[in-house]
Amino acid sequence: MLTVDLKNRIKRSGPLSFSDFVESCLYDLDEGFYTKRGSAGRRGDFLTSPEVGPFFGFLIANWLDETWLKLNKPENFQVVEVGAGSGTLARAIIDAQPHCLKNGVYTMVERSQKLREEQPTSEKLVSATEIPDSPLVGAVIANELLDNLPFDLLEGDGEYWKEVCIGLMNDQFVETLMGESKESVGVPPVKGARIPVQNKAHNWVENALETIVSGSLLVIDYASTTQEMSQRPQDSWLRTFKKHSRGDNPLDNIGNQDITVEVAIDQLPNGASVSTQRDFLKNQGIDRLVEEGRHIWKEFSSVGDLKAVKARSRITEAEALLDPDGLGGFFVLEWDLPSVD
Image (cartoon, rainbow, N blue to C red; front, side, top):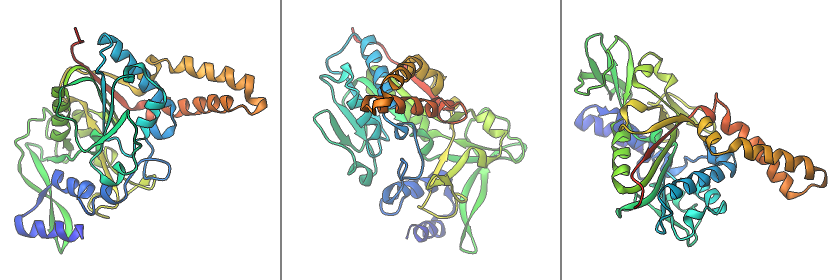
């Protein structure tokens, strides 16, 4: 069992870093949360924007076409979605038939074999376990990925930041403070304050940018800053989920719940334009498309037309996607690289 394996590792080598602990809880090859059961969707453990309905994918397809146009319509335009899960967003984007993918391919990157097996397949869709090595002209998309990358924890003692690791007491997992951290976080170590250190998220963005020759990286997630999180209780930015509800303490129910953290924007590489999902989707014309849906619904609802039903769905989906206290309050970060000559 994963719990036993983790305890044995601690007994052999001492306390685990929090990032090592999270890595095992979420991605252990046999018993990690995403390996054996975790998933997005109404029948899963949490709802992301693509699972609200296909409208989100349609709007992302619009963004992809805009990116393609800015690059002067390259014929070899490629799209790579990392953390693609079972392919819900990919399906919606392909169904929207963006011009940019007329000759291109959409790669769904997902490390969970269980989720890869659920992905759709077609001549336009391919599945992979990691970002392709070849230089990319196109776009990389990561929707609610960075919040699931392993992270470390620090606690302030009034003078220094100290690393929070996972040890054992009476054969139970406990937090233990180690020595002074060497991380440079730029935030005062107020006594009792805690912050995440998201080196894996930083490195992931850095590596993704290195693969893009020309194009854009689009990251969508719930986010904050290191300073802001240091002023809030840990359980307001480090959360667990299972079956659409808050889960247990991160040290409990090992492998059976999601462990997620707000993304510290200031810890990511510089150069991104930052907006909320609400503003981003409005820039993609969501208001116009919703108004169009209202007109269609009004005209055809009385006859039960399928077109009217889809138009009505567009309206209800938009409400969820734009909610400033929910998905609409997520942050969208976009890094643009030089256009194709």
